[in-house]
Amino acid sequence: MLQINISEQDCWLSSDELCECSDISSALLLELVEHSIAMPLEGEVIEQWRFSVENLHQVKKATRIQRDLALDWSGIALILQLLDERDQLDHEVHMLKQQLSRFKV
Image 1 (cartoon, helix red, strand yellow):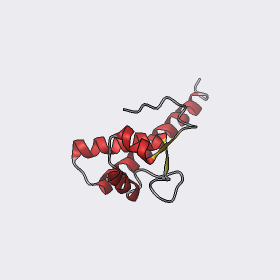
Image 2 (cartoon, helix red, strand yellow):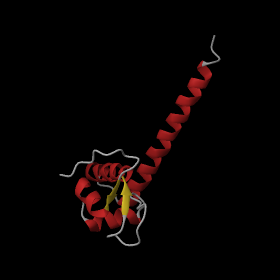
Image 3 (cartoon, one colour):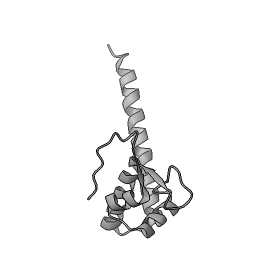
Image 4 (tube, helix red, strand yellow):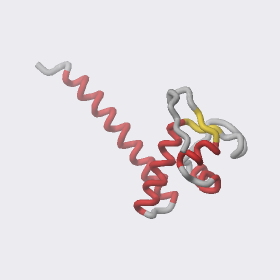
């Protein structure tokens, strides 16, 4: 299996690499793109698509949820969106707690 050891900020994956790393078919990748679970950074057709490493994490998370819960892809897309929103809220709470701690005596 292909392993990525490059800085995630400067790295991108082709559609073939994303499929290989996440152990999915190109047909499934098309379906994930249709449901906005994976979003190409560039490219007009699947052979030209480039994905961020974050997309690899999303695809792996989505396929794990699908395997474990047997949900359809639109339901999984909603779950991923809600998880992202929760993470953002957790981050905001953490930042606010830090700001508040400056005022404690």
